[in-house]
Length: 236
Image (tube, rainbow, N blue to C red):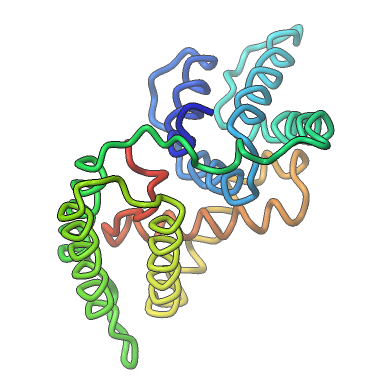
């Protein structure tokens, strides 16, 4: 894989190319990509699964409706991942490790500073006992410190270590957002997720549906509060 952190962009572009449209991906689509990334499904398996899903669709006698979600390809993606896993028995897992990121130091510094600014301007919910705004400011300061440290060193940092730190920061934000958001809002988001996922449940296992629900709710809350994704996967 030329650039491990191009996971989201590569999938988006490949799916839209096969679908023949330039429409934006839905919340469900992005949440599904997140579940694949979290499950360690290789980019190649996702792209192959998308092709297999569309090839199967193209063979149908009636194609009055377009494929309107990546979820249509979910079963094919999992099958492709299993095929690749079987074929790779006895080989190394280098493909899953970001050894050749293709990033420039300036890109990472700019990404960290941009996200620091977004965190400082985020519209976070407040609830007694949960200092969400304070956490956002604290993490924004940490992002700026990281950016300054990388800039001073004038060399690319170890991306695995940086990604782990950013992941921990994201998880803290998720936890606080989930706790500070009123229950009625969370119920509404879950209901929305149920509606969007319903047509594709038969293509997924219970564990996959549960994970997709989680990612869907996370993405919705982050967008609602204008909180950026901190992971390097979102550096385009």
